[in-house]
Each structure stands twice: as structure tokens, then as C-alpha cells.
Image (cartoon, rainbow, N blue to C red; front, side, top):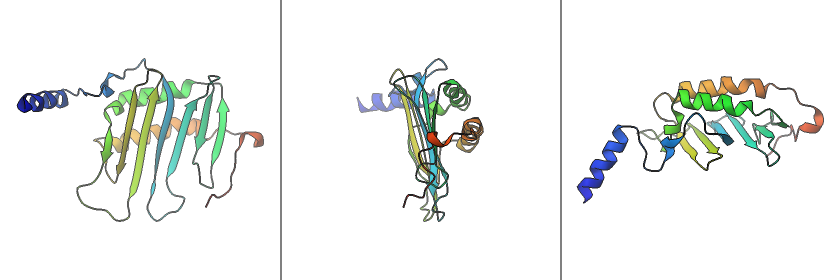
Amino acid sequence: MNNRLIIITALFSLFGCSMNGQNAINEDDTIVAFSFGSGGGMDRFGGFDYDITLTPDQKVHFQFDQRRPQEKEFTIDDRSVFDSLQQVIMKHKMYKYSGNYKPRTQVLDGKSWHFNVLYESGKSIDASGYMAGPDGYHEAFEELHSCLAKWKAMPVTPNEVVSFIYHY
């Protein structure tokens, strides 16, 4: 019995299938929450955070760099950011990311990252890493940064900004 389970698991792994349903994500799935960030190392405010969620009134809420001096938060009616993110996810097969990635050797002062996506259907992508990641993750993350640059650069009025203060 155990040999059968090992063979089935190996086949799923070989053909890119996942027993937890992660690979069932396709181009038509609708993102309702997206979180992507990196931090660590000696730089206190180094790294970045992107948190984008669909509000109950169907608006898109952005929060960039929470707990950092450059913190920015606003809400808009345009849902196209989710379509753009989904295109990057599909192009780089980021729906295959899962679990926690670690290097083979210990790194004392490294950077960690997280990537989480929730879909309207309840499907999700949940992955994180410390100085390691799946093949091609650097390129995928760079494209996510480029994709989000338009919204991160969006000017906001003072009443849309939560704070630009240091949070210790």
C-alpha cells in the first residue's frame, strides 16, 4: 500500500499536479486578496510589502510598505490590478509555489519573502522562503514589482493616506 502511495505521489509531482488542488488555478480565476513582500537583513526598513484586497463594496484597497516610513494606503474602483497580477502568476506558473523554501546551508543574515493569493473560489497560493525559492522566482518577483509600479506610484490625497510615520 505504501509503495502505491509513493508512486502516485511521484506521478503527481512529475506531471506538475498537486494533491491539494493548487494547480487547479487557471486564467479565469478571480483574485480577491494578494500579499507579497520581502524583508530582513540589517536594513531596518529594507524590503517591501504589497497588500491588495477586494473590499465588501467591490473596491480595491491597496496598502504598500506597512510599518515603514514610505507607507501608503488608498482605495480605488479599478479592479484591473488583479487581472494584471493574474497574468504574471500564469506566465511564471506561480500557482505551483507552495510551502516554505530554505537554503541547504544556514544563512545568518538573509532576506525572507512571502507570496499569498486568495481567489474568489477559495483556492489559494501560499508560499514563503528564506534566501531560497522555486526555480525562476527572481524573474517572477521582478515582473510583479514592474506590474505593481503603476499603482504604487499613484498619487493620493491627504485624506487617503493612513500615515507616513515611523512605527517602532
